[in-house]
Image (spheres, rainbow, N blue to C red):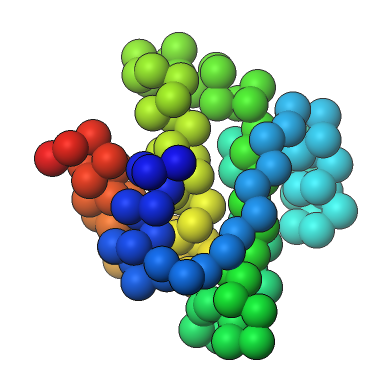
Length: 127
């Protein structure tokens, strides 16, 4: 929990709230199809509360992050990283999407998001 607080604090979202759902490939596939019109499972989905600068002033909510535990386990093995680190990497990735970072917009945006994600991961690793 402290790691998540560190990440949110660094992103100037100390008082923000977010919802996190851990699910399986079947459920995330369904959400991916329903909301993004994409087939198949993905590792993480993010649903921002607003289209503007977060958090939404009236609610303090950033949005929802959905993580497929099935994908996380698979990525953990593939990447050779502890499952907990994979989960935090996916969670950070989702939070950055809630803050309107989008690696699919352009190569520059992808680089910016990757750099931010790496920096935040290093914070929770302790440097």
